[in-house]
Image (cartoon, rainbow, N blue to C red):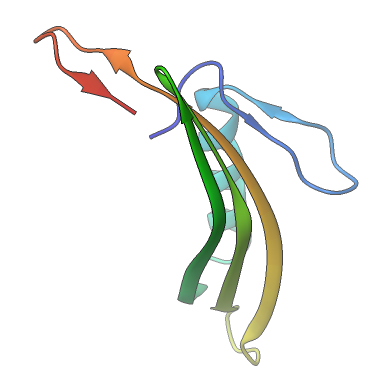
Length: 95
């Protein structure tokens, strides 16, 4: 899902730039808590605009996860996504 030009911005942290950096972040998080489970992830998209081959959306997501041997943690966060259709080898478009 992530492309090389993807950027993940999180409060108080340096930007995560690119697919490899995002995958490394995920692996580090799993290493810290290998038995953690996402119990719920519900997007709440408030607006979506499509302009040519680019789409912009913003909203929130509600998420609940359970760290190993701890009570579940629930939070709500903001999201902004910019999606671009890219041609595939077969000539189809993908997000």
